[in-house]
Image (cartoon, rainbow, N blue to C red; front, side, top):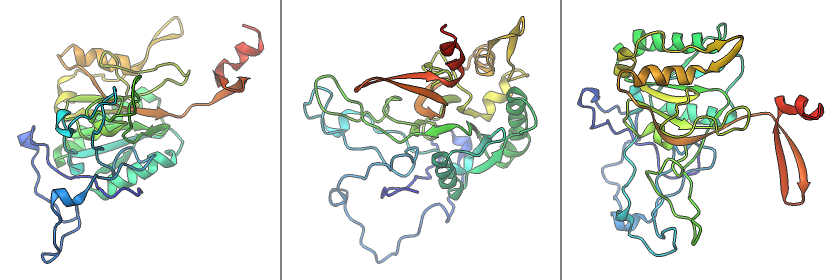
Length: 299
């Protein structure tokens, strides 16, 4: 899936003693006892993740320069936490009669090979009902089998690799724990009860972004959190035939009612149909496809 040299680490989450699992020989290839192991100094810098891989196979880049361009010791910024053991995660794909995009499919294949369970949500029901079914099935089947985390992802979400942040006064620098630089990596590292990756809406708006928001399109929920949140978990609220609350906001409010606050731990791409119009050699206007009727009508 990637040209990166590093692989997804299968380290148990030490912050959750109940979630310890015995090592599996399938997690990582065995090393020959006679093979010499290079010292940390001899290994050199670790390779960056492959673009489009969702940050899985790569590791954090060494921080060599600050946003202002001055050298910064690597230890000055905290290293990202280890990956959650994939055998503790069940992914539920919200496909709704479409296949996952090819970038997401590569991401899913990599996690499946590391022991992550992949499930498919119902295509015969609406979105809130399908999400409700996912949660019920997870608690009934996966949680008793040792899967602690339910990770839901919509088929049009694109997991992103780790990325650099360009400062105003200097070259790029990588901040390993920043949600805006970690790509989608944090959803597989952070051990919070309710985490998600921010993404744009179909109308090319900011969509769900920040810790005061929550997006179910790419989220991870701990089993204990689901058990504490009252049902129904997912509902769209309508007033006078107009939707006034999406299922994401409904779930967030119910979670906050029992003291569980969501946390944005990264960013993800969101496929959307748009109309592009050149306004100059260097400017392009982007219009959501469903806004085209208003544009043609002169509104």
